Image (cartoon, rainbow, N blue to C red):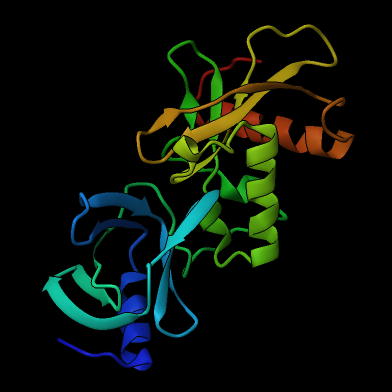
Amino acid sequence: MKTNTNNNIAAVVDILSRYNWLTVTAEAEGKEPQTLRATGINTHMGNFIVFDRQCATGFYTDNAVVDIAAAGENTVAFLTASGTAYTVTGENKAGLAHRNTAAGSLDDPASLIDWYRSGLTEAGEVLIVLDFGKAGQISGKDSGKIKSFVNSNLDGKPQSRQHCRTIYIKAASDKTGYFDPVIIGLYSLESEAVLTEKTFYFDVSFTETESDTIRAMLKAVEEESNIPLF
């Protein structure tokens, strides 16, 4: 399969969009191959490709795509005008939503709970991991707000942390009273591990409504785990 038309690029990108996890290997002459992960793929300016990374900055092909070749049942190779080959393999990562069929909403944080990754930690603390893919196609404005919060408040700005990630919420063990602490940080979808953590306080760091929403989400995960903690 070879083509250099924008229509066929869009068609191939549409097929790869059916997967929720992409492995992208870029190979350029004179350089070591680089492998990155992505949670989405789109066309850009017709014949460029942008790879999305949940809650992080995405990355683009280094030039316009001039050729496409099938490299397997779920693998496609894109060749750019610079001579760089991007081999993209799609798969479905366990637990992650498919943005094209998602039914959640940013206006309802509880609808974004990743039930596959949420539950109790080994220490018995309630852990909520969010999946923004459940919100479907997020606008550029809303995506920018999420990344700004992550980079500014959750120490997500370093380049080393610009990979597929999400936000987690954890019930703190050191409750002190009405203004109880809650831990919020970054969770890596690539290493399946916590990256950062920061302490916030109910009814101080958040409005009363926001605090009630977070408490309700923690309670829902607690009840789903069938172990009373509160």
